[in-house]
Image (cartoon, rainbow, N blue to C red; front, side):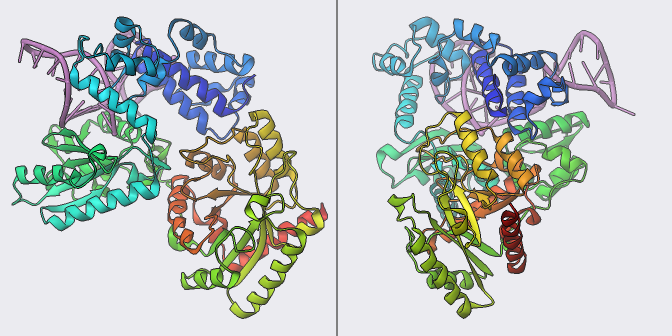
Length: 586
DNA sequence: GCCGTTTTCGGCCCGACTGTTTTCAGTCG
């Protein structure tokens, strides 16, 4: 039996990949991809929809996909997927993921060379056999080798800080050149993501700028970097793609009159743009990166707002542009009023030198005050986290006493004393109830025994969430970006329990965690779960990462009244006290 | 495979760039 939405979605996604390799109809493939996204982000358990014969409620799911989903739910298998696997080697999916290789070329490689694994492909390239294929050449072969090499090192992805720094630096250099009237970071960096493959920078040359000079200036952006971290990927009239410091940057060059449409277009996402263009078409218009056209006549657009207005909808914040219901919401005038950085009144989930943090309670409080926060919620590691200097009961009491002393000095600023309690293997918390009762709040996090199967993980989390002393669930998936995947669990079950008990879900905005991913966070928000955007700071410098959390919260459609640390100090104190009173009642 | 204030069949977004081609297929976003 396949119970969770994620499991069902991964089946559909796998079928789509195999169908691509099989050379199936592209629209059919897209139908499976769309259905996977729909299932993944649906806030109700799709297995339940299947049992109640309500799969038709899912947009993009008709008879065919309904049958496929039903079989997955009932048997935990898909005969369609099994059939595809029987005729297509699994290794081809890895080859398909390489840059520059689509289904047609992978098919050629497989049929003509018998290559079915990345390692075999690498060898074939080195033996010059790929270049000899029809439709390939020396350059394609070199590009494939580079792609394989690139994936071996970084996986081809960058964390937010590196990607943002790289893009901001490039944009600054271009602005300083005086050749451009606009230099904007667009693409996924503008929309917000947890990982980045590249950066998109939109440039509008000044009227007097010579196009050749513009292109030369852009090409020079790779200068000064080590040879293995630089290169020209593409150099056209409207697009220059470079490898700069190991990261790909795409520069898009447009005229000033196309700027609004281009900014919209190059911000994406692909899914969002596809839906928008489809909307334009159904209204007798056409849109592309150069404008919105009616009868081939460009509409007058001055801002990005105008682009959306031309399609009869309100401007959509970039973070929402994922083709995940934002256009329908805009059409109905139901776009959320997204939370902003200035709505945040408190810093939550901060470690002190009592465990593995760098600073004292007073230092952290002073820094929060300096940054305009009204409160600070401390949560050091619990006793089982000995590797991180977790606090035993005595140490915890000492910290509690110091917090009380500090609070007398910093009022009306307030320090709350909590704990980041390990969720033990059996799902219990790390202290007895009478110790937990002394604290203002409890974050429960899994730090050990991460290799659980989904059923065990779900059980463990459900037990923790069911503990009345747990205030919030910390970094729920346990993932470390670019390092480890984390465990999977049934989100609908765990979030459902959290919603029922009025528990809070942490979004841990450490750039290596960003846990949970935005789509899961969105699902939680839709279920009415309050979210806390937590820096998990171990030093004052980590306070800056709140910026990433704000982006993810916005991406998850959250409004200020859904976010715990947007509460005033009085409100959050009341919230903690109420939770504790309820826990005492049992 | 889905879907329908043009439609139950015939659409399904649009353009740029590369590489290998002598006019364009494949890939990408």
